[in-house]
Length: 86
Image: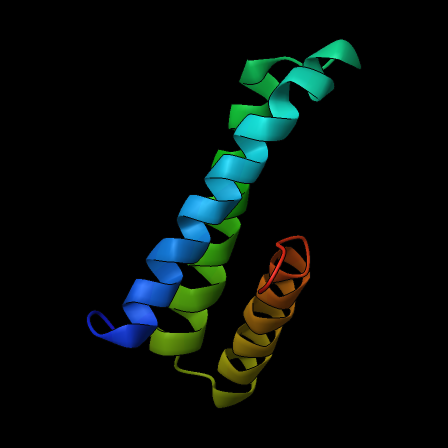
């Protein structure tokens, strides 16, 4: 989980997401958004994903852990669909 090909893919995807956000930020600003709002969304998204993964890995209720893992996986698939070649 923390090294090897899977973590390298994850690191590459994170770089791709960051590049996508950076590329779209000027257009977002033209539409009335600002960098602070984008940063807020990024932090909120990271915290939400971290909470889901924490519940999935360390949760004591197997049903809730499964639901958290499924939701985390679903959200990640949605995000990955925004990247070319992912």
